[in-house]
Amino acid sequence: MMEINTIYFSTRIGEATSQVPFPVAPSLQFSEIIPEIAAKFGVDSQNLAIATAGGGNTLTPTDLMNSVEEVVRRYGNQFEIINRGIVGMGGGNKPTYGWAEGIVDQVVPKFPEKLREVNPKHPAWKTRVKFEVQALMKYLQFLKDKGTRPWFQLTPVENPKFNFMVWKGYLTVPDRPDIQFDIRILLTSDYPKVTPRCFAEQKILNYCGKIYTKNIWNDPEENGKPYVMICHDHMAEQNAWEQDLGIVHFFVREVHFWWGAQQNIIIQEFDKVEAGLRPSPPED
Image (tube, rainbow, N blue to C red):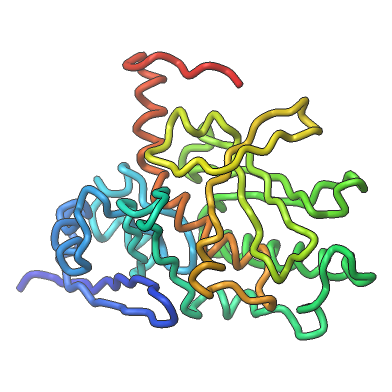
């Protein structure tokens, strides 16, 4: 009798999580089950990205060439579906960002009530910032405990003129540390009533797929280096943002969705440049 493993795929839509079991032979190449998964979730297989549960890493082309058994051994048997066909588009085709409570909400709970009204103008703002840093560290440790390198790093900018309203870091492909893009998170004076905004260094446009370019921010600490906005308040527009959430929740529920959708396109384009199959992108 053929050995069968069961792996689980879910998609977070609105306040509900739909999880679908897939009994598969562990010896199958993971890419072989992509068409069946895509059909089950109604997603074009060319637009299907698969991430580990809990806002973790997106499977790379190398992962997909491995057997189901190898992938499960490394990442576990629970995965999340991302439809990259609707990510990065403007107009009426904005993606539905999942915000159902799950693993991450257990690791990083919502912020206590005493901090929900604390904005950058509030006397307790530095206390709120400490909670934000602790929450980020807790989530990054959660990813490390799963045996994988985190896909981002982030820390507040110490310059007092920014009043901790600018955070800096990077997005990366854990298995490809040579692929890394600087990011900036901008908070408004009304945060946390208003969702954070994420900007990536403009050179990312040379590698990623379609992107709805709405705003450019020039970092004064880097001689005006340009950053392009990659997330466009989808959580707020879909009533998925609340004042008891923090930057870490924004990363897991929104930035992760965008980065997971773009990751393998970026790897593909990056490797074309490295192989000399397309010209090197211009420097900023």
